[in-house]
Length: 114
Picture 1 (cartoon, rainbow, N blue to C red):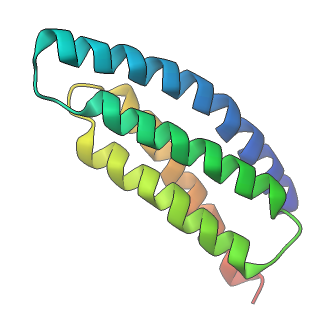
Picture 2 (picture 1 turned 120 degrees about the vertical axis):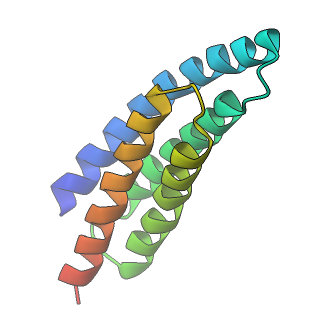
Picture 3 (picture 1 turned 180 degrees about the horizontal axis):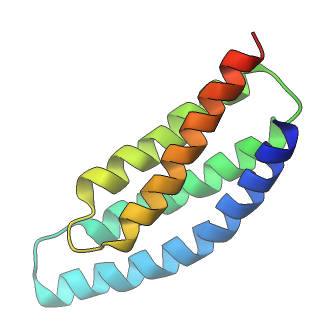
């Protein structure tokens, strides 16, 4: 699971950049189009959760159940907000799925270390 946490952390930090830029563009589009959707704002929060989760994943890759619990909470918030508030921002479902995959693997790592 150490390798997964390192790779997951690096990918999450890289995805943070993509999601943040995409979400800014979607947020501007939502504002200019006056659609009333909050997909861009939700995307920014998902991006922040990806960054925080990536940092925690890299920092806690050598063990400890506290790190896995933190990963479950951070990526879980990202997944819930991504699925719940995406609206017409369909790429947010992809990023929320990445967060959900990380939650599932953190649960597996938590159970495996018992």
